[in-house]
Structure formats: C-alpha cells, structure tokens
Image 1 (tube, rainbow, N blue to C red):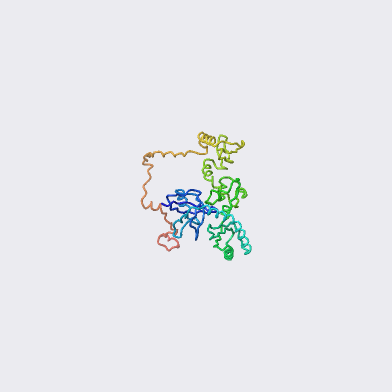
Image 2: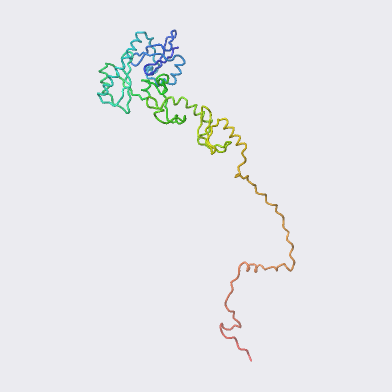
Length: 355
C-alpha cells in the first residue's frame, strides 16, 4: 500500500502525495522532489502515515498542490539530493530580488496593489507572485511584462492580510513568532464576540495582531470561558444572601470569587460560600406575606322542607270565577256614554206623570 505523506513548501503551503516504495519509508523532515504543476517542486515532509491521512481527510480540498489532473494524489518522485537542496536554497535567497523587480513593474503600471512575496518553483518553470489589494485589479499587462522579464510562466495570486502575515512571519505581542507562521496552519474566523465573552478590552490596538485583524489566540480559551461562566451568577443580578439583597459587580473565574455590593458596602465572597449562603437563606425564609392560600367557599346548607299552617275558613278567600280572574288580569275599559231610560229620545225631558 502506498505511503501517504504531507509535504510543506514556502509560506506554509502544503500538499498530500503518495510514496510508492514500501521498503524505504519516508520520515518527517526529509527533503523530497514531488510532481508539481507542469514540472517538479521540492519540499519537506511534515506528516506521514495515519497522521497525514487524517489531515488529508479534513483539509485536502484546500491544497494548492498535490493533486493529479485525474483527481488522485500526485506522487513523490524521489528523495532530494544535497545538490538539489542547495539549488533550492539559492532560489529562496534570490526571491527577494525578484520581489523588488516586481514592485518596480507594479509602480510603472500604476496598479493599486501591494506585492507581499514571490516564490520560484524548484525547476524555475513557474514564478508565483503574492499580493494584497482592497479591490479587484486588472493585471493582464503586468503579467505579460513579467513573463518577458523572467522568461517563465507567471502566476499572480491575491491573498488576504492574515495570509500575508503567515507568509512573511513576525513577532507578536507575546514576544513569540506568529502562530500562523509556525504551527497554526488553518486560519479560522475570529470575531469581536470572543473578546466580549472573555471580558477583554475592546480597544483594537490591544486585541489586534500584526496583520491588523483580531488575534488568533482569542479563540484558544473561548470554550473554557463559556463553560466556566455558567457556574457563576450573571453580572448585575440581585442576589439574596446572609446580608440581604446584594448586586453582583464582577466575577473572577480563575480564583472562583464573586464581587458583591450592598448597602453595607462591597465584599468578595468565594463562589462556594455564596452558594451555601443562598441555599441557607432560601431554606429559612418564611412564606411571603402577600401570598394568601386560596379559601374554598363553604358548601351550601341542606334544603329543609317548610310546612305552612292551614288557613281557617274565615281567612280563606272566596274563590274567584275564571271571568273575574281574566278581568283581574286584563282590566275592562269603561263606557262613558249615558244610558237611556224609558225609551225617550236621547237628550229629551222625562215623560209627564198621569193625573
């Protein structure tokens, strides 16, 4: 079975290759000549075996070299000899002069771009120029000019400021070389929320690296801060302790202390003691005075039969006929006309009496 190896080049550029010779396995830091784009390139092995396979499974898609046109991994051609290594070192020393010449050509064409680095392929069949720019640049005339100057194939590659810092390297605020230039090969995104969770100063000059972006190390301990802060009360919250109501001013995650403030004054309490005080106060606190237990209404009294005394005959009211009852319920309208008597004409005098 071929051996899978990870080979690194200048500027943390890497690729994954296969070594077919199973009898003579490669080791870390060995210089090898590999199959590159239209030629050969020289690099050093950084991982072999299972370690290289794990890295290839997670980040092989982002490699700039190390993949054959058919989709398979390219092969390691041979071990590099001393003469080949010496030639490689000479190319590295000459790349600074190449970068200066490229800068002069860029100024001649008045292009808004900053040339960061240049890299020769080991067989000098390709020259890669890395640059940074705020927006897209039309460098077609520059490519033709550089191809005529160096007599080789030219590739201009635009990179970000963090990739530029990784290629050029430098010394960080901690006094050590940049992490992205030494061991941090995968640049993950860093946002301002990481600094807020760690209660760091939001001053850009204090939390930014040499590239002008947020420090990569802000992400190293972020998971620890998030997990540890869940055990502490939130800042600004009011707590009921042995002294009464106290406000949480700040917390100390490393010493596990809580800064409280009340009417009696500020104090610093260990987290374990604070939890014990709160539990004791909660256990000894009586029921709140405003709370009234719900009172069930009493059940209604049982219904008792009421016996009325029998009425006497004198007190018994006379029975009313049905017509009278109807009249009582519906009164009749009186007729106001005068009744005629004796059959006389209406309105005449009464009849005379006989003598």
